[in-house]
Image 1 (cartoon, helix red, strand yellow):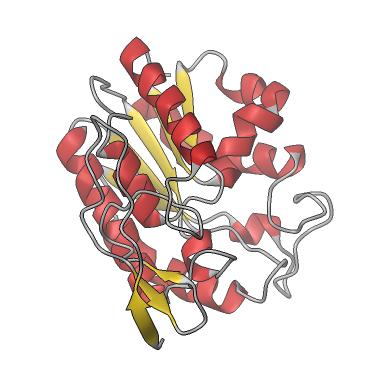
Image 2 (cartoon, rainbow, N blue to C red):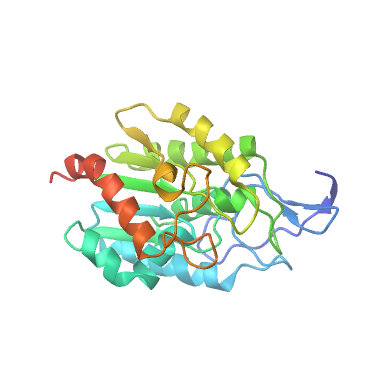
Length: 254
């Protein structure tokens, strides 16, 4: 995409690692960030995103408290499970010492920044579940869309970072969920066909549950998503949890 100028580089809050990559600005004024490098999430004017920083600080404290065997990492789809569908979260994970580390709106570069800035420090999870990428493929009021290949590179960078930081953890890489709020399912299908190459069958497994969320024509099944056609409802979260159980249970010693 055409690039008009360099975007302002935000200053990281004191004590945190600053973003390691400079962003640029597209011709239509959106930020263009490298998907495979840690970047602090900012607002349109280049200042650190206050909501992101608030959640990040909470997660750093959660990591310091320890006691997490199952670590779920991602964007709003992960974030909303515990924080908006708490009873469903408890139904599936109350006995698993599970931690929800999702932040709404996150892209791969923001997840990289978070785990490089304390959200894994001191933790030794038995299993990590990673679901990320849908926000890279879509543009919004701040960020330009990434290509499938750029998003793939970002996911690979997260997996590489996780393997360095928690080498004993098993990682379940999820295929990106379908969405009907924007016409992105073609890109999502293309990405999900590439992601199995990142799995080694041992430390990293790949799971795509989209066939359980859609009909034969690729349309979302009734009730699996909220009215926004993007975020799961309890039914969708139930499908996700039950699909993961045969993989996670041995990893968690259940």
